Each structure stands twice: as C-alpha cells, then as structure tokens.
Amino acid sequence: MVDCTYLELIELSDPFDISRALEGASKERLSPEVSKFEIHSEFSPAGDQEYAIGELVSQLENLQERCVLLGVTGSGKTFAMAHIIERLNIPTLIISHNKTLARQLHQEMAGLFPNNGVEYFVSHYDYYQPEAYMPKRDLYIDKELSINEKIEQERFATVASLVSRPDCIIVSSVSCIYGLNAPETFLKHHCRTFVGQTIEPMDLVRELIALQYRRTNSDLMRGDVRLRGENLDVWMPSRDDPMRIRFGFEGVEHIQICDPVSWEVHEELEEAWIHPKAFFMTSPERFEEALEAIETELDGRVATLKSENKEIEAHRLEQRTRYDMEMLNEIGYCTSVENYSMHFDGRTTGERPHCLLDFFAASAKQFHGDPTKYLVIMDESHVTLPQVGGMYAGDRSRKLNLIEHGFRLPSAADNRPLKIREFQSLIP
Image (cartoon, rainbow, N blue to C red; front, top):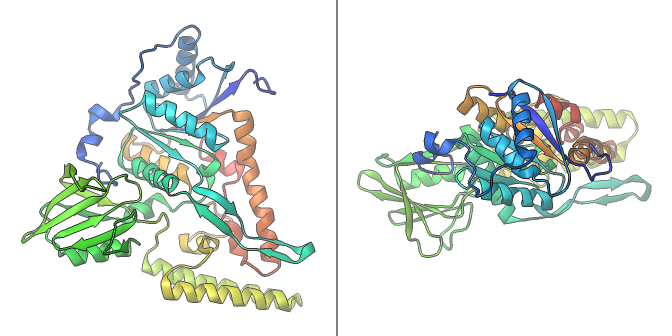
C-alpha cells in the first residue's frame, strides 16, 4: 500500500510542457469479490504505457509523494491512470479544473470500472451569484442561486459511497476543497432500520423528520418521507429509486428498493442505513452552543464598530444577525446559514473547514486501516493546482468587504475553501 499522495497528469502540448451501505445497498456490495478495483476493457496497455504504469506504481508504493505523468494528447493518460488505480487498489480522488472535463473523466472511469464506486462531485449550482458589497457604489448584492437536483444527488451518492464501500473513485472539480460537514457528524446522524425491528411507523417517521426529510401525503420526491397504511416510503437524495419499509404486527417485515413510478420491487434488503437529507447536521446541544457563540461574537463586534464610530455598520450588523438568529430559533435555518458554519461545526477562528478529503481519510481508515491510504490524481495540474490556490484569496476578498461594512460577522470569513497549504497538508 502507499501513503496518501498525488499524481499529476500533464499534456506535452500544454504551454508549460511539463460495511453496511449507508445508502441502503445490500451487504453483498461490501464483499471482497466486488471491493477490489477491476478494469473491464478489451484493450491492454501498449507501447510506453506499460512502462509508465509500472514506474509510477513502483514510485508510489515506495512512498514517492509527487509523481508526474507526461503525455501528448490522445496518448492514453486516462487509461494509464485507470491501471495505476487498479494495481494500487486504494480509494482515489481525481481532480479536474472544470465540470466538462470532470464529467468526461467520470464517464470514462465508470466505463472502465463498472463494478466499483465511480462517482461525480462538482458544484451543484447551475447559477450562483455570491453575496457581495461594492463600497465605491454603496451597492449590496444579495445571494442568488439555482441548484441542479441531479448533481445534488450525485454529491450525496459520493459521500454515501465513501462511507459505505472501500472501492471508490471520485472525479471532482475544485468543489472538493469547499466545506462539508465532518464525516463523524454525517455518520452519527443517520437512521438504521432492519427486518424484525420492533418500532412504530410514526416513530420512524419522526426519526426521518429529525434528519430533515419532508413529510408528504402526495407524490414522493427525493428527500421526502410518506406513510400510507403499513407502508412507509422514503427517498434518499443519493438514490435513483425510493425505499419502501413495510410494517406488520411484529414491526418491520420488508425493506424494499422500488421503481419510483410503478413501485415494482427491485431488491429486498435485510437492513438499511438512511443518511440525512442535508449534508450539514448538528445535535440540539451543538445548535444551542452555536447560537450562544453567535450572540457573543455579535455583541463584541457591535461594540468594536461603535468604538470606531461606525454606527450605521453596527446597526446593520445587529439587525441582520438578530433576524438570522430568530429564524434559526424558530425554524432551524436561515438564509445564508453557511456564514455561521464555524460556530455550528465547533471550529475555532482560522481552523480549516472539513471537506471531501476528510471523507477519503475516514474511508481509508475504515476499510484499509490507515487514513493516509488513498490516492489523489490532479488532471492538467498546471491549470488545476493554481486554481485550487486561487479559490481562498478570491473568497476572502469578497468576505472582508461584507465584514468591514457590517453585513456579516468576522466568523463568516471561516466559511471558506481550503488554503493551498491546507490542501497540500491533506495529501502529504
């Protein structure tokens, strides 16, 4: 096995010339027969490919931290990459610098590894206008966004695969360096049910509502739960098909994966682990502590602004933040709740947020016994690596304007992507 490392893929034509399935799957998915990476292709490495694959695998197994694969366009670098993954047999993150290339890589990897967990993880926004303030024009721009439900499903499937199976290949954009909940928190907040469980249907519904599922009596959508007679239907955001839990006099009698239209049974399960509807979950205790921390920070920041004779900014900040706190108290969330993520995560000022790489470490530890047993491949690294490095600076510049003029608390700056050194520290 190798330590966590990364492999760069560069085309010579470039300018630089250089255990139980959380998503409800059966236990069979985690058996040794399907957990090993296995390429299905009518082609074999040819020419210099075999030499390059052998050399890179040898270097990685000997703990070489940085390796570079050079090749002209069409020379089969992706095919070589697949064979490296197969031989190392560890979870792999492939980072590309845009969604289009990431989707192409995902399709190629899914075709080469049909029996393994090949997932796609990019930004789920079709349109995103971040919150901003332009001091010279005294212009505040509110956040606007449009979420792509299909990509949102794929993001959930990515996390569900990482915590449930050892054979994952995740193709991602720089979205992988943006904040997610901690793996431990995601795993802690789940609902487990099994055939023979003695539980009332309404008790299970309450558990699912606590995981932010929406109860409905009409058509079932992703993220919904519906109780009709002895049938409880739930549709996890990570799945293409809903789950039906059938109750009898003794409790749970059947757990079935069904067609979303005809409700024909596709699969019978012995147990199911149902993950939260949202990525970000917190305990009631942590929630109360976060509200107290927000109020403490607000009082201190308002006092600071007033001492600097910034009465307008102080009034604006207090009004906006107290409205958010009231919404959090009443309904459990507010617009732009991510700006308070430092408090809800229990992080200190400056501490890095959790991200997809933390799920890789958790997966490697769970299935391979060592949190460093995973591979990071950076496609077109001469473009992708500077992009990773530039995300933090751009985000911080925008946030500082909002903080300085009383639109956000200073802790909003800690809702951010990773710094380049933080990213590199996660792939030593």
